[in-house]
Length: 411
Image (cartoon, rainbow, N blue to C red):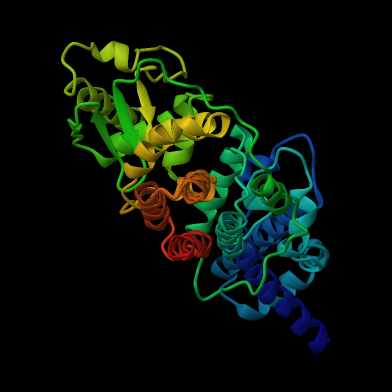
């Protein structure tokens, strides 16, 4: 009898504490809205069980306190409570059902359900590991000269969710290795490894050039430089210039902000971007630079281009006709440093933008250097090698071309 009483009291004490801890841990990997949809999953049942354990324990505790207050006799409380078997059986059954499995054990099963958020499949530590894995893949692509494709909008949204989740990662709870069996991990890593097949839109009669090699800046053909009061205004302009195929406010906000940004803040950034560009050329209307729309579109004027776009087209023309080497050399001479130097554009590193810029510059430098070697042009060789080393200091391929060129001149 005494043993049974101890077991009952043990259940009442331990079960709700464990369930409460499980619910607290679940707040980072589950959203309440998914408990009220039409489909009930195994993990949702476990969560409901933990909730009911806490609720029934609270009910029993309140009932005991009321009895104690009314009787003021501990013995009477114990005797009356022994006859209340229903709460005991309910609590015991729910405790066994809910505590038999952990929410984290079902993380992979949840991730396979369509339409569920990334938080259901990844812990913050795992999300941080995934971001590190993506950055390592980007570095490997630079070494292989494998230009990655642009992420689709749904992939960019998924990557943004991973970034938000990784921000909550604790350095104490470190995951030893990334679980590549998770569907979300596989989806993003496959997207990262996809090879580029996008065609860039060529700007017509460009008046402004967004320079990306080095610290980003905007200049006219005469060398005047735009001034922005807000760093986000320049960053937004950079993103729009690189993503002309999806010029939408929602896409820009997803890429640039890992937190929900207010409409007022975003509008202020857009306004500052318009002002900074219009100050460069008073003959242009602000509405022509970035037309005002009442939809999700955020169209950038065709008069704005990037040094990356100009370099790509110069390289394409050089490949068709080597006599166009002067134009390619001019574009390479404009390279100041590694792309986005001095900034913290995490979206550019993760979505492959930085990788594409580096690979394009290195291809142009090496091909121009090979041409300079073939025609024994010292000045052209110096321009090509200097530009490539500014983008990738210590490039073995470029240094090898330079050494063989020097040896050729000696002979």
